[in-house]
Length: 219
Image 1 (spheres, rainbow, N blue to C red):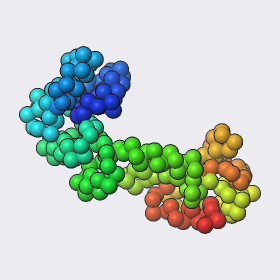
Image 2 (tube, helix red, strand yellow):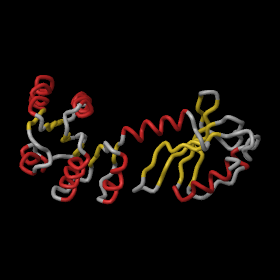
Image 3 (cartoon, helix red, strand yellow):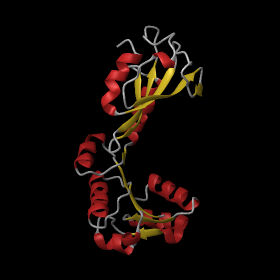
C-alpha cells in the first residue's frame, strides 16, 4: 500500500518505520521545522515538510494515489480536517485518526471519521480488563459492521456455572468463541462445562449484549 501519515511525533515516526519495514510505501508529513529536520535524518526521503491540513501539501505527498491516510498529530482539529479532506475530496475510504482528547470523540463520530484511536481509552480498557467492575469487558467494537467481542467473567452466582455450552440458549446473532481458564484459552464445544472464574469470549450483535449478560452473570 501507499500510506500517508500526518504527524511526526513518536507515534507517527514509529508507525512509519514499522510500515516501511513491512514493505509499504510511506510518506510522513511534519509541519514543525526542527522536528522535520531531526526525523529526516532517520527516515530520509520518506519525510515531507509541510502542514498536512493544506491541500497543496497533501497533493505534493501524492494523496491522489494513496491507499490509506493516518492522522496522528497532537491536534484533534487537524486530525479531523485531514481525514475529512482525504475521505470527501479524494475518496480515500481507509482512514485512521488519533483522538488526543477523549471528549472530542463525538466530533469524529459526527463527521463519520472512523476508526479512531485514543490512547486514553485503550489504557482504560486494559485497566477494565485487569480489574473488571461489572464482569464484562468490551474487547473489540466494530460499529459500522454492528458486531463486537466481549469478555464475561463468571462469578460464583453465575447461572451457567456447572452447565455445559450445549445447555445454554444464547441469543440469535451471538456466539461463545472461547473459554479462558487458568490463563489458557480453549475453543468450547457442546460438552464444555462452565466453571466459576472462567472468562467467556463472545462475538455478538451489540443489541444482544444485555440479553447475553443476563444469561451469563448474576446481574
